[in-house]
Length: 232
View (cartoon, rainbow, N blue to C red):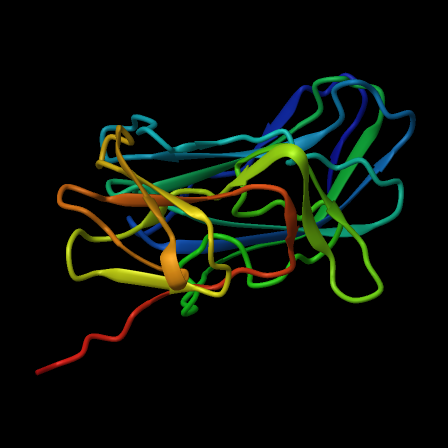
């Protein structure tokens, strides 16, 4: 059954869903926004709560790209990690501007057990697919003759979502060298910066998350995986 938010309906909250902590999930749904596009178009947000019904740090997923603007039906996707103490997920569809009618259908939420540690897919699904890239400046998804790319213009940057890592031996590697890796403690306090030399980095002591920083250029895809342990 389709869900509709008519003009004037601020939000619709879906029932809380049980989730596993520290796991990657994939949200997918179809939507259309009929009517004039306002400065505050309809969209969605995710709230993750712990057993005390609190929203932990990183439990409120709401970014500027999470918008439904198209009058035609389109498929929207978001990949994300649940915080380490999350037990439930609440999905909200919002219509703050109230100028258009948002219709949502075919909502699915699945555990995403793929090798890529990055929250996003290996490739970009379309012009609005910023999943996994929570912070960008002077950058945008651009359609090319081949796949869509994340184009970082001069003076801009792109920063990934936090990637769960363990300190020391838990090394991760990717297919885009010459980036910078930002390292964070469990409370998302930054504890170090390292060069992503030869497309690899090692998480320092006390590290719980890493974020990858890219300067100007095109990012067609990005895969981040653990380096296999080499036994003596």
